[in-house]
Structure formats: structure tokens, C-alpha cells
Image 1 (tube, rainbow, N blue to C red):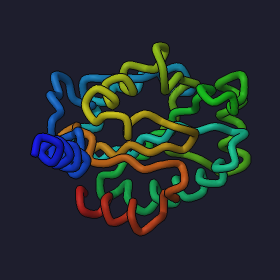
Image 2: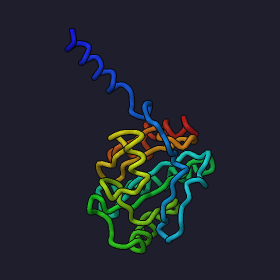
Image 3: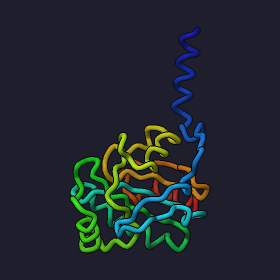
Length: 181
């Protein structure tokens, strides 16, 4: 009987995302990050907007997703979506300097959505934003690879996360963005 109760408890835990148990001492708007140009991006400026955070890398097999991110940005920015690219070398696939990343994104993808400077997204050296995401949403918020996506709702909390394999223009992501816009 104890074994059945234990298995039932474990099963229930998998059906509820850790976000339901999140304490959220801080919300997304309490953070900032340095832009690729050296200015501070104050997330408080994004209040009442939906934000898709994506850790990016120039030498990754998923780099073509930049095209889809730009499409999302152009289609939904007037409705309140912010696409935020966070170039990262956490998986050893990013250029060495911010200026190289900026040029790569402009020349190859004509990116004009906000980009941060090259930033760690996992481990002890991760930016506080990614530590916050892990604390409040659990393991699914930790980037397992480049082009991991975290969707922030208008309340400044994590709405959902998407793996690198999920294209930014997939029905799954677009449906969720439209739901929270």
C-alpha cells in the first residue's frame, strides 16, 4: 500500500510543473542585462509585455533559428512581444567578442531584436536571470543546449520553456505566445 501511495505521489509531481510551486521572490522585471552594445537592458522597461528569451550561438546547428526569431519579432512586437537573444558560449559555440556576434547577426540574419552581450546561461557563472529561472521553474528552465527558449508572461513569471529542437515559429510556441499576449 505504501508503495502505491509513493508511486502515486511521484506520478502527480510529474503532472504539475514546478512553476506552480514557484515562490517568485523576484520576477523577471527585477533583472537587467548588458546589451551587445554595452548599454543596460532594464527588464522593468518590458513590463506588461511577453518576452521570449533565447540563448543563442553563432556556430550551432540551430543558428538558422535566428530567421524564425526575427519573424516572430516582426510579427508580434506591435502586439507586445519582445524577443531577447542572449548570445552564450556556455556550450563552446559562440564567437569570441560581442562585436563579432553583432556583425554575424546583422550580416547573416538582419537581426534587429535586442541582444545581450555574450553571457553564461548555466552553472555557477550563469547570469542571475537564468539562476532565477531554474529556481522558480525547475530543470526545464536550464538551457541544455543553444537556442533554448524561456517564455515570460505579462506578470513577469515563466509561462513555459521550449527545447532547442522546438522552432520559434512552431505551432506550439506561436499558440503559447498568442495565448499570453
